[in-house]
Image (cartoon, rainbow, N blue to C red; front, side):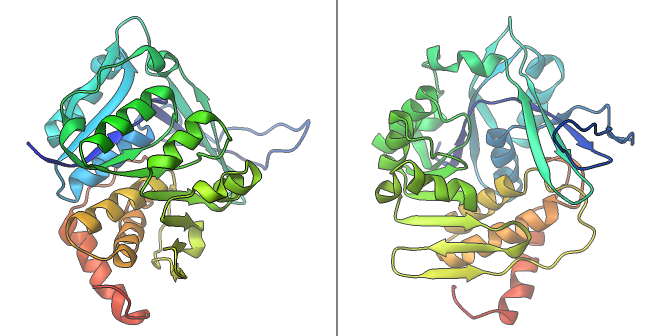
Length: 307
Protein backbone atom coordinates (compact mmCIF):
# COMPACT_ATOMS: atom_id res chain seq x y z
CA UNK A 1 0.00 0.00 0.00
CA UNK A 2 1.22 3.49 -0.88
CA UNK A 3 0.98 6.16 1.81
CA UNK A 4 0.47 9.79 0.86
CA UNK A 5 1.88 11.03 4.17
CA UNK A 6 3.76 9.42 7.03
CA UNK A 7 4.10 11.69 10.05
CA UNK A 8 7.15 11.12 12.26
CA UNK A 9 7.99 12.51 15.70
CA UNK A 10 7.87 11.68 19.40
CA UNK A 11 7.26 14.33 22.01
CA UNK A 12 4.30 14.28 24.44
CA UNK A 13 1.11 12.66 23.20
CA UNK A 14 -1.47 14.56 25.26
CA UNK A 15 -2.28 18.23 25.82
CA UNK A 16 -3.61 20.31 28.66
CA UNK A 17 -4.90 23.67 27.44
CA UNK A 18 -5.08 26.47 29.98
CA UNK A 19 -5.98 30.16 29.94
CA UNK A 20 -4.17 32.44 32.41
CA UNK A 21 -5.61 35.48 34.13
CA UNK A 22 -2.53 37.67 33.59
CA UNK A 23 0.72 37.97 31.67
CA UNK A 24 3.82 36.16 32.88
CA UNK A 25 6.30 38.51 34.56
CA UNK A 26 9.44 37.85 36.54
CA UNK A 27 8.51 37.19 40.15
CA UNK A 28 4.79 37.43 39.44
CA UNK A 29 1.96 34.95 39.83
CA UNK A 30 -0.58 33.98 37.19
CA UNK A 31 -3.68 31.97 37.91
CA UNK A 32 -5.15 29.27 35.69
CA UNK A 33 -8.72 30.21 34.81
CA UNK A 34 -11.20 27.46 35.57
CA UNK A 35 -13.41 26.55 32.66
CA UNK A 36 -14.90 23.38 31.24
CA UNK A 37 -11.54 22.39 29.72
CA UNK A 38 -9.17 22.98 32.62
CA UNK A 39 -9.07 19.34 33.76
CA UNK A 40 -9.43 17.74 30.34
CA UNK A 41 -6.61 15.81 28.69
CA UNK A 42 -6.69 16.32 24.93
CA UNK A 43 -5.17 14.14 22.24
CA UNK A 44 -2.15 16.02 20.93
CA UNK A 45 1.51 15.87 19.76
CA UNK A 46 2.62 17.41 16.46
CA UNK A 47 3.12 14.10 14.68
CA UNK A 48 -0.38 12.87 15.55
CA UNK A 49 -1.90 16.29 14.82
CA UNK A 50 -0.44 16.23 11.31
CA UNK A 51 -1.60 12.65 10.84
CA UNK A 52 -5.18 13.31 11.94
CA UNK A 53 -5.50 16.49 9.88
CA UNK A 54 -4.05 14.77 6.80
CA UNK A 55 -6.47 11.87 7.18
CA UNK A 56 -9.45 14.21 7.45
CA UNK A 57 -8.35 15.76 4.17
CA UNK A 58 -8.60 12.36 2.49
CA UNK A 59 -4.98 11.17 2.49
CA UNK A 60 -3.69 7.69 3.24
CA UNK A 61 -1.72 8.27 6.43
CA UNK A 62 0.68 6.52 8.79
CA UNK A 63 2.30 7.75 12.01
CA UNK A 64 5.68 6.84 13.49
CA UNK A 65 6.21 7.71 17.15
CA UNK A 66 7.18 6.51 20.64
CA UNK A 67 4.49 6.59 23.34
CA UNK A 68 3.63 5.12 26.72
CA UNK A 69 1.02 2.65 27.92
CA UNK A 70 -1.60 5.39 28.41
CA UNK A 71 -1.70 5.72 24.61
CA UNK A 72 -3.57 2.41 24.72
CA UNK A 73 -5.34 2.81 28.06
CA UNK A 74 -6.86 6.21 27.21
CA UNK A 75 -7.92 4.90 23.77
CA UNK A 76 -5.76 7.24 21.69
CA UNK A 77 -4.72 4.22 19.61
CA UNK A 78 -8.36 3.28 19.04
CA UNK A 79 -9.23 6.85 18.03
CA UNK A 80 -6.49 6.84 15.36
CA UNK A 81 -7.33 3.36 14.11
CA UNK A 82 -11.03 4.25 13.86
CA UNK A 83 -10.00 7.16 11.61
CA UNK A 84 -8.10 4.71 9.42
CA UNK A 85 -4.58 5.85 10.33
CA UNK A 86 -1.82 3.23 10.22
CA UNK A 87 -0.09 3.14 13.63
CA UNK A 88 2.08 0.08 13.03
CA UNK A 89 5.07 2.42 13.30
CA UNK A 90 4.11 3.56 16.81
CA UNK A 91 6.22 1.96 19.54
CA UNK A 92 4.47 1.62 22.92
CA UNK A 93 6.77 1.52 25.96
CA UNK A 94 4.54 -0.17 28.53
CA UNK A 95 6.58 0.96 31.53
CA UNK A 96 6.32 4.64 30.54
CA UNK A 97 3.64 7.29 30.14
CA UNK A 98 3.19 9.30 26.96
CA UNK A 99 3.75 12.63 28.69
CA UNK A 100 1.75 15.79 28.17
CA UNK A 101 2.10 19.42 27.08
CA UNK A 102 0.78 22.33 29.12
CA UNK A 103 -0.30 24.86 26.47
CA UNK A 104 -0.99 28.25 28.02
CA UNK A 105 -2.54 31.42 26.66
CA UNK A 106 -2.43 34.83 28.34
CA UNK A 107 -5.02 37.64 28.11
CA UNK A 108 -2.90 39.46 25.50
CA UNK A 109 -2.87 36.39 23.27
CA UNK A 110 0.67 35.28 24.07
CA UNK A 111 1.14 31.52 24.09
CA UNK A 112 3.77 29.16 25.43
CA UNK A 113 4.14 25.49 26.17
CA UNK A 114 5.75 23.52 29.00
CA UNK A 115 6.23 19.82 28.32
CA UNK A 116 6.49 16.84 30.64
CA UNK A 117 8.05 14.17 28.43
CA UNK A 118 8.45 10.51 29.35
CA UNK A 119 8.37 7.72 26.74
CA UNK A 120 9.79 10.03 24.05
CA UNK A 121 12.97 10.43 26.12
CA UNK A 122 13.77 6.83 25.17
CA UNK A 123 13.25 7.23 21.44
CA UNK A 124 16.85 7.13 20.26
CA UNK A 125 17.12 3.47 21.26
CA UNK A 126 14.12 2.56 19.06
CA UNK A 127 14.86 1.28 15.54
CA UNK A 128 11.39 0.11 14.45
CA UNK A 129 9.36 2.38 12.13
CA UNK A 130 6.71 0.09 10.63
CA UNK A 131 6.19 -0.61 6.95
CA UNK A 132 4.40 2.61 6.02
CA UNK A 133 7.67 4.57 6.13
CA UNK A 134 8.99 2.52 3.21
CA UNK A 135 6.15 3.49 0.85
CA UNK A 136 5.53 7.14 1.71
CA UNK A 137 5.12 9.85 -0.88
CA UNK A 138 5.76 12.50 1.79
CA UNK A 139 7.27 12.14 5.26
CA UNK A 140 6.66 14.96 7.75
CA UNK A 141 9.13 15.29 10.62
CA UNK A 142 8.00 17.09 13.78
CA UNK A 143 9.53 17.32 17.24
CA UNK A 144 11.50 15.80 18.69
CA UNK A 145 14.25 16.29 16.09
CA UNK A 146 16.23 13.28 17.27
CA UNK A 147 18.46 10.57 15.86
CA UNK A 148 15.36 8.36 15.89
CA UNK A 149 13.42 10.74 13.64
CA UNK A 150 16.44 11.38 11.41
CA UNK A 151 16.90 7.65 10.82
CA UNK A 152 13.22 7.36 9.89
CA UNK A 153 13.53 10.30 7.49
CA UNK A 154 16.52 8.69 5.80
CA UNK A 155 14.66 5.39 5.42
CA UNK A 156 11.82 7.24 3.69
CA UNK A 157 14.16 9.38 1.59
CA UNK A 158 16.04 6.30 0.38
CA UNK A 159 12.71 4.88 -0.81
CA UNK A 160 11.93 8.01 -2.84
CA UNK A 161 9.88 10.05 -0.36
CA UNK A 162 10.02 13.82 -0.10
CA UNK A 163 10.77 15.24 3.35
CA UNK A 164 9.04 18.16 5.06
CA UNK A 165 10.43 19.53 8.32
CA UNK A 166 7.70 20.91 10.61
CA UNK A 167 9.02 23.29 13.25
CA UNK A 168 12.21 24.39 14.97
CA UNK A 169 15.38 22.84 13.59
CA UNK A 170 17.92 25.58 14.25
CA UNK A 171 20.15 24.42 17.12
CA UNK A 172 23.31 23.91 15.06
CA UNK A 173 23.72 20.23 15.99
CA UNK A 174 24.80 17.46 13.62
CA UNK A 175 21.23 16.14 13.80
CA UNK A 176 19.83 19.51 12.68
CA UNK A 177 22.27 19.63 9.80
CA UNK A 178 21.34 16.06 8.90
CA UNK A 179 17.66 16.97 8.65
CA UNK A 180 18.35 20.07 6.56
CA UNK A 181 20.57 18.10 4.19
CA UNK A 182 17.68 15.83 3.16
CA UNK A 183 14.71 18.20 3.50
CA UNK A 184 12.67 19.29 0.49
CA UNK A 185 10.45 21.72 2.43
CA UNK A 186 10.85 23.54 5.74
CA UNK A 187 7.82 25.00 7.53
CA UNK A 188 8.80 27.20 10.44
CA UNK A 189 7.93 30.42 12.24
CA UNK A 190 9.98 33.63 12.07
CA UNK A 191 12.09 33.06 15.18
CA UNK A 192 12.84 29.47 14.18
CA UNK A 193 13.80 30.59 10.68
CA UNK A 194 16.10 33.25 12.13
CA UNK A 195 17.85 30.53 14.13
CA UNK A 196 19.18 29.01 10.90
CA UNK A 197 21.33 32.10 10.42
CA UNK A 198 22.21 32.37 14.10
CA UNK A 199 23.59 28.82 14.08
CA UNK A 200 25.32 29.19 10.71
CA UNK A 201 22.95 26.86 8.85
CA UNK A 202 21.21 29.26 6.48
CA UNK A 203 23.13 27.86 3.50
CA UNK A 204 21.64 24.43 4.27
CA UNK A 205 18.01 25.52 4.08
CA UNK A 206 15.94 23.45 1.65
CA UNK A 207 14.68 24.78 -1.71
CA UNK A 208 11.22 25.57 -0.31
CA UNK A 209 10.72 27.40 2.99
CA UNK A 210 7.33 28.42 4.36
CA UNK A 211 7.56 30.94 7.19
CA UNK A 212 4.37 31.18 9.22
CA UNK A 213 3.40 34.60 10.57
CA UNK A 214 0.50 33.70 12.83
CA UNK A 215 -2.51 35.93 12.25
CA UNK A 216 -0.55 37.81 9.55
CA UNK A 217 -0.43 34.86 7.16
CA UNK A 218 2.71 33.22 5.78
CA UNK A 219 5.63 33.73 3.40
CA UNK A 220 6.68 31.23 0.75
CA UNK A 221 10.39 31.29 -0.17
CA UNK A 222 10.71 29.24 -3.36
CA UNK A 223 14.32 30.02 -4.23
CA UNK A 224 13.38 32.65 -6.79
CA UNK A 225 11.03 34.97 -4.94
CA UNK A 226 9.20 35.48 -1.68
CA UNK A 227 5.42 35.22 -2.01
CA UNK A 228 3.17 36.54 0.73
CA UNK A 229 0.19 34.30 1.55
CA UNK A 230 -2.55 36.36 3.23
CA UNK A 231 -4.28 34.93 6.30
CA UNK A 232 -7.71 33.40 5.97
CA UNK A 233 -10.20 35.77 7.56
CA UNK A 234 -12.01 34.03 10.35
CA UNK A 235 -14.13 34.85 13.34
CA UNK A 236 -14.67 32.98 16.56
CA UNK A 237 -11.05 31.97 17.15
CA UNK A 238 -11.01 29.88 20.33
CA UNK A 239 -7.70 28.01 20.48
CA UNK A 240 -4.70 28.32 18.18
CA UNK A 241 -3.00 25.17 19.49
CA UNK A 242 -2.12 22.95 16.54
CA UNK A 243 -2.71 25.60 13.87
CA UNK A 244 0.78 25.11 12.44
CA UNK A 245 0.38 21.34 12.29
CA UNK A 246 -2.93 21.66 10.43
CA UNK A 247 -1.32 24.11 7.98
CA UNK A 248 1.34 21.49 7.24
CA UNK A 249 -1.31 18.81 6.70
CA UNK A 250 -3.23 21.07 4.32
CA UNK A 251 -0.05 21.88 2.42
CA UNK A 252 0.73 18.18 1.96
CA UNK A 253 -2.86 17.44 0.93
CA UNK A 254 -2.71 20.19 -1.68
CA UNK A 255 0.54 18.86 -3.16
CA UNK A 256 -0.72 15.25 -3.19
CA UNK A 257 -3.88 16.40 -4.97
CA UNK A 258 -1.88 18.22 -7.64
CA UNK A 259 -2.02 21.87 -6.57
CA UNK A 260 0.92 24.23 -6.89
CA UNK A 261 3.11 24.90 -3.87
CA UNK A 262 1.62 28.37 -3.48
CA UNK A 263 -1.96 27.16 -3.59
CA UNK A 264 -1.07 24.30 -1.28
CA UNK A 265 0.11 26.79 1.35
CA UNK A 266 -3.23 28.56 0.92
CA UNK A 267 -5.02 25.25 1.44
CA UNK A 268 -2.96 24.80 4.60
CA UNK A 269 -4.10 28.20 5.83
CA UNK A 270 -7.72 27.22 5.14
CA UNK A 271 -7.28 24.03 7.15
CA UNK A 272 -5.78 25.95 10.07
CA UNK A 273 -8.71 28.38 10.01
CA UNK A 274 -11.03 25.49 10.91
CA UNK A 275 -8.90 23.89 13.61
CA UNK A 276 -8.64 27.08 15.68
CA UNK A 277 -12.42 27.28 16.14
CA UNK A 278 -12.48 24.58 18.83
CA UNK A 279 -10.37 23.77 21.86
CA UNK A 280 -7.90 20.98 21.16
CA UNK A 281 -5.77 20.21 18.11
CA UNK A 282 -7.92 17.31 16.95
CA UNK A 283 -11.37 18.36 18.16
CA UNK A 284 -12.69 20.08 15.03
CA UNK A 285 -14.09 17.62 12.48
CA UNK A 286 -13.91 18.64 8.82
CA UNK A 287 -13.17 17.11 5.44
CA UNK A 288 -11.59 17.99 2.12
CA UNK A 289 -14.81 19.40 0.68
CA UNK A 290 -15.13 21.94 3.49
CA UNK A 291 -11.51 23.06 3.12
CA UNK A 292 -11.80 23.20 -0.67
CA UNK A 293 -14.91 25.40 -0.37
CA UNK A 294 -13.00 27.93 1.77
CA UNK A 295 -10.06 27.81 -0.63
CA UNK A 296 -12.26 28.49 -3.66
CA UNK A 297 -13.95 31.36 -1.83
CA UNK A 298 -10.72 33.18 -0.95
CA UNK A 299 -8.77 32.61 -4.15
CA UNK A 300 -10.58 35.18 -6.38
CA UNK A 301 -9.96 37.86 -3.74
CA UNK A 302 -6.22 37.41 -3.94
CA UNK A 303 -3.54 37.64 -6.58
CA UNK A 304 -4.46 34.78 -8.89
CA UNK A 305 -1.31 32.72 -8.36
CA UNK A 306 -1.61 28.96 -8.37
CA UNK A 307 -3.82 26.39 -9.98
